[in-house]
Length: 229
Image (cartoon, rainbow, N blue to C red):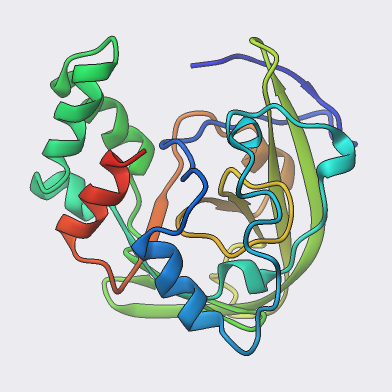
């Protein structure tokens, strides 16, 4: 895991780790589903930063960064944590072991910590984000609170896009922070979400990154998406 060296966006805190590589140029099924879900309300150029693989690896200029709205994450999303626990993602772990430096079991243990969450579903409709725990919804309205640029030991960087609660259920987190390997407006095909009531503390999170894919994808399709990248 890369160590954090510097936060360059006005905070004394910051850390980020991502569970999966971002999807390269071209449209996966997840992207097509999101494009359909956001058609009519989302007119961003989906290839704005999508075709540059270097951005996904964390190499970009500050001038390439652009602020984003919740439009980029609109839709109905499922946590992949239950799939990991059920063994449905074992083929992904085996695939990683073939190309990485850990055993499939070690990768599964790593992602078990990373994916862990009791929020099995998230829906985003306009500025309303609804979290589901055991099927029970908690909802709140969020507005942009800017972004943080994070720099790592090996020289690559990442951006978290941050939103703050402005109304809604008291139990909803005050801050949510998206990481989806993008640095400018584009519809997400999956994302990692960090949340809590202390902005700085959430930025320091290194080991737990609940990860969400479109609810319309079944386990086999998510495996295919992950193994493709």
